[in-house]
Structure formats: structure tokens, C-alpha cells
Image (cartoon, rainbow, N blue to C red; front, side, top):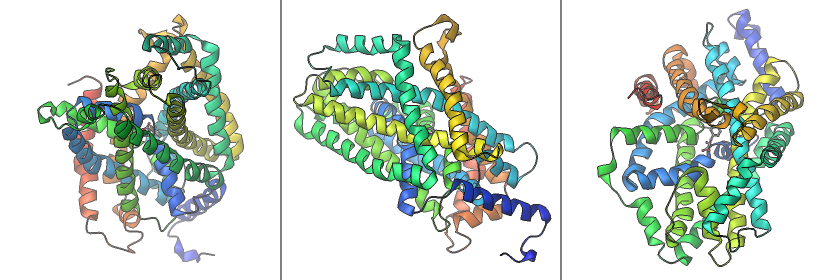
Length: 469
Ligand code: PFF
């Protein structure tokens, strides 16, 4: 029992006991490796597989990579450490964490995070559904002997079939909800601890096959890595920053929520550095798995859905052992999407369960039901139904656009401003040094980045994303 004088005020003691109760309600990650796997599971997703490699290849190759590393270390990492510090110091859902630290409207940042996670998950589950459908098609060897046009037709057919779209998306939601109901340690931690190594193994097998066993694979390596510094402009820096945010799951409370479950002894700066490096390495290996194969068959590289669901199956249809490789590939895409989806769902679950004072399981089921509706609407909007199209954009596209271009950067900006200017310095210090257990020389540098550098760059990114310059 803590001595009475431990708390200065009644509110403090109340907050302490609330937090304590919540930690018990949601649980914590049991091991450091499990924590790492869970965070890695969130950050490694479609962003690594379908966006990064193309972005790098198209924007200066190795030159882009250098810029990407710079912005990730100087801007994304401070933002990640801000989220980690807020989350682990408060050990509760995103909204309550802000409210605990400061009164006033700051809790709205947490609320924005929860809303962003919800919106992203609504369309992320649809893409997860596509990967599951393509996994099934690979298993029945449907791509054998198909031409690129046939595969395009198959993907188009899926997009026009509302029932299929909804059912496959729903399947991914069922899996993610089951993991969430399993709990923080028994569900999320275990799920990621087993799946992340498999994901990495699949990726390495595919990359080795592409680089060493396909003709002319060097052309893909050239596309990915050839340094072209003439392509680096300020716009490139902003593209790198936007990608880095999305890829590191920042700006929407995912890292904040997961950090609430981290062990006290976890060293946050080291974890953040590991995660940034791991995420970038996975993105590069994805590029090594994809582009040598694409160039080897003289196919034009592309990004986004087309790359995964048209170009890659076209490549597999031509390779010896293509069926097996296609199965590995779509399993990889599905796992990457699914572990990220779980983290999105957890942001919302922690919020609903703690704010409505209901059990995790009930919260998860409630979210499952509402997400079935919003995710279903996103899925159906892809069929081009006029009632689900606004300003010439499907609901799916609107959700994607609004979350990535508006909600994420605003969330990111407000989080660094809060951590740098509103949150007491002692919280950041205690979290980054594990209560002064060790005194990193870089504390001052990180704080400077959080207070000045990150807010300026994120503001510029936001203005750029909404087309102001
Ligand atoms: N980081 C994921 C990706 O690269 O695909 C996307 C994402 C997942 C964003 C989870 C935000 C999040 F909370």
C-alpha cells in the first residue's frame, strides 16, 4: 500500500487508482520481446509493402532512402517518443491520457486519435480482405496461365462484387476482433510474437528468390537503389515525411495506446530507434522482393493496389513455382495488414472499454458491430454505388484521403506540441530516462526536436498535403 503522503492532492490519488485499475483491466505486455513484436506488428503493414518501395524507386532511389532516414530520425522518432511518454506515463486510453496530464481541451487530441484509428481501420480491413481473397485464389492456383489483362479483370471483378468485398473484409475483422478479445498479453502480444517472425521469413524467402533466381534482377535493384540526387526537392522531403508517419503508425494514438502496456523497464529511446530501423529494413526488403521480380519480366512498376493485386500476380503467373510464391506473398500481405489492423482496433477498444466502463470483450464486440457497418460501407462504395460516392470519390477514397492527409498530420502536430509545450518536462524526462535510472545525453536533443523541429516540419507537411503549397 502506498503511504498517504505519496499523493499531494486528492485528485492525484484518484488518478493513480484509476490508472491502476485500468492497467489491471486491460493488462500489460509481459516481455520486452513481446512488446517489440507488438509495436513492430503495428508499424509493418501495407505502407511498407505497397508504398515505400515504389516511392523510393520513383524519387531518387538511394538518395530518397537517405532523406527518409533523416526525417524518420529527426521528426518521426521524436513524435514516437512523445506518444510513448504520454502513453506509458498514464497507462490508459489515448483520450484519458491527455486529460490526465492537462485539463482544458487537450483531451480532444486523444479523441482525434481514436477517431482516426477508427476511420483508418474501416478501409484498412477492406484491403486486408483483398489480400485474403487473393490468398485463396493463389491456393487454388487461379493465376496460372492468366495474362496481365485477365488478372486486372479478376481484381476489377472483385471490386464490383459487393457481397465478396464485404465478406472478405468481414473475415479480417473477425480475426482482429478475436485477437483483441484474447487480451493484451494473451491476444495481441502472442499474435504478434508468433506472426512477426513468420512474416520476416516469408519476406526474406521472396527477396532471395527475386534477387538470385530471376533473370535481369539487377534492373529492379537499379530502380530501387540508383542514387539520383537531382530528384530530391523539398516536395520529396515532404513525401518522405508523410510516408514515414503512416509507416510508423504515428499521429493517431496507436503508439500511445501500445506504450500504455509496456513494461516499466523498457527503454523508450532504444525501442523507438529499433522500431524505426526495423520498419525501414522491412520496407527495403519488400522492395527487394518485389521490384527485381517485376523488372525481370519487363513489367512497368506501379504503386498501391495495382502493384500488389495486378502486377505481382502477373509476375507469379510467369515464374516457375509461381503458385507457391504467390501463396507466400499474399500470406505476407495478409499478415502485415492484420497485425496493423489489430493495433488500430486496440486504440478504439481501450477507449470504449475504459470510457464506457465495460469489459474489453463487450467493447470489442460493440466495435465489431459498428465497424461491420462502416467497413461494409467502405467496401460497398468500391462498387461505384452512386449513393456511396461524394464529390466523385467513393467513401473508401474519402476515408483514405481524410485520415492520411488531414487527421494524421493534425494529430501528429498536436501531439508534439502537447508533449513539448504543455506536458510537464518531468514526465518526458522520467519516461525517457526510466525515472533517471540512466541519464541519456541526448535527452536535451530529443526535447529540442519535439519542441521546435517536429512542429515546424509537420505544419509544413500538413499545408502541403491539403494543397496549400
Ligand atoms: N503502419 C501501417 C502501415 O505501414 O501500413 C499503417 C498503420 C497501422 C497506421 C496502424 C496507423 C496505425 F495505427
